[in-house]
Every structure is written in structure tokens, then in C-alpha cells.
Image (cartoon, rainbow, N blue to C red; front, side, top):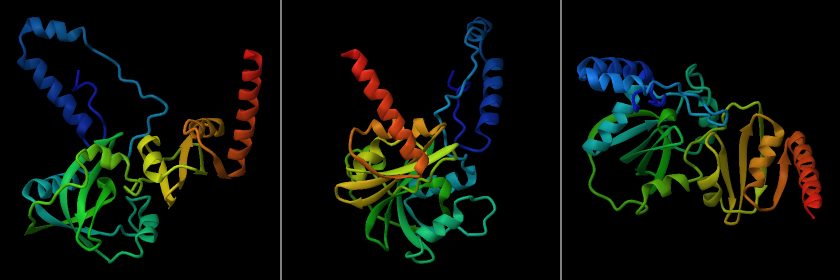
Length: 255
């Protein structure tokens, strides 16, 4: 069942899983193979699922090897003219204040919502960082690093509440944003995959996300149960007004 439902977060993983499944079928006893036949399934993708582009296995191996060997990684900025990286130009602008390259101590890999994240200590910034592995260009080194206390007892929680983990908006039909009266770490924990949380101050953030309709974007924003301001674009504001009328009418009929 695991092989039949293997995720597609790594290039070639689907083909490898299919080959492994064939090998497994050939090796198992006939009686067990018959039982396995009853577990044939069709995997359907939920419309709200929007995984990140699959990762190059070579890049993932380089990062994983550095984590295992405890070797410093040199992270190069994306090239603005890289045809394989649609967010390269944006990343160059976002990281314009950073040096051309940075050295990090890679400590752990975390997979969340179909995305691979690296928890690493940035030696230049002298702080812990979370980076999307599929957006990193890394150069391995043989420089070892010592032990360091992790940033949080629960690394999964640290990744989920890090608003600057390198996420970019997924390509939905409708993409909008709003200012929320909530800290960025809180919103980052519950924001859907493929959304971006921008820290504004200790009590406010901006959430950019997409959905199949403007009503869908408005509905997701409403789940945070807080004040929403600075709605962009106008289509999103109109959808929020319409949703408010629908809910007001529904509440009135219940009375």
C-alpha cells in the first residue's frame, strides 16, 4: 500500500516505487500475492492539495549526506536566469541583503505538506533557519561542525511556526492576501501549503494564499477568526462582502 501511494515529492520516485512493487510481487508467496491483489487502489488527488515541485534526488542526497556527516554546506543564491527555477528572480530580490553565498550547519531534514525543509544554523546570521530544499543551490564541503542545541525540543513545531521558511505562493487560479491581527508564527502553523506568511510586527502579519475561487480564498482567511484588513486584490474584497452576506442570511434563518 505504501508503494502504491508513494508521494511525488522527489523526481523519479513514482517510477522507482513501481519497479519496487513489481519486485515485491515476484518475491512474495502465491497466497500473499493473492491477498495483495485485493488491495489494488486508485490514488486520487484532492483539489486542495498543491505539493511543491519534485526535488532533484542529487540535491536531496547532497543535503542529506551533509546532515549525516555533519559537514558545513555552502548555500548559493538562485540564479535569476535559471530556466528551471520559476522563483529564482524573486529569491534573488528577497535575499539581496545577504552575501553572495552563505555557510550553514545542516542539522535535520523535515518533510511537511509535501515539501522538504532543512533546519540549519546560519553561521553568518548566527541564528537557526528553515529553508525549502527545492529552492536551495548547495555546494558540499568537508568542513566538520560540532554539536549544537536545537532551536526547539520539537523540530516539526519549529518548522511549522517559522514564517520565513522559503515558501512561495502556489499557482492557483485565484491568489490574494490580507493583513491578519495575529503573529506570523501562529498563522504559519495553520496556513495551507503553498501560502506565504510575511511578518509585519509582533501582533500582525500578511498572508498570501490561493484557491480555486475568490470565495475559497475568503473562506480560508475566515478560518483564522481574526480581523482582516488590506485585502488585495479588489476581487477578494468583493468575495468577502458576498460571503459575509451569505453567512448573515444563514444566521438569520436559524433564529
